[in-house]
Image (cartoon, rainbow, N blue to C red; front, side, top):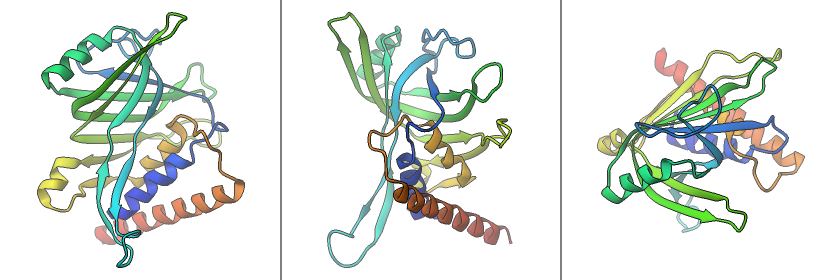
Length: 237
C-alpha cells in the first residue's frame, strides 16, 4: 500500500463520519495516569467528549508544474474531556518535556449485546504533549482540551456483520521515526481495512455531504482498498 493510498483512506474515512451512524462513546487512557471514568470496562480511563486526528501531505498541485504529493505528515491527536484529575499529571509531563510511553483510545457502540462493545482502538507510543487548554463556564463546568504528537500509532477495527456481531479485529500500524530514518517517510503496514473504522469512530462532522458526494467518496474509498489489496497480493506472490 503506497502513501497516496493511505492519505486518501484517512481523508475519505474522516469525511464520511456523520450523525446518521450509531451513537459511539470514547475513552482515553494515559500510561501511569489514572482517570475517573465510571464505565465498568474502562476503570481508570477518562471519558472523551470529542477527538480528532488528521494526516496531510505537501502537494505541488496549486504551485504549478503538475500534481505531485510529498511525504505524509501525521498531525497531532486532539481530544476534549471533562477535568477528572488527569490534567495535573499531563501538565507536569508537558512542562518537563516528559514522554508518555503509551496512550490508548477506545471507542464503543451498542451492537445489540448486553453492553456496548469496543469496535475501534488507537494506540500511541512515545507521546509528547504539545498543548493543554483548560476552560470553565458560568455553570461551574471545567473542561480541557489537549493535543500530543507520537512516534508510533496502531489502529484496530472490528467490522460489524449483518447480525450485529463484531468480527475479528484488523490492525494497521505506522512507525513514523522508522519512515524518516529510511528516507521513505512511509513505514505503514497491516490491513488497510482498519482505517475504515475511522468513518464510524470519529465524532460527527459539522457539515453533512449530499447523497451524490457520499457515492463519490464511497467509490473512491472502495477503489483505494482494492488497490491496496492487489498490491499486497502482488508482494506475497
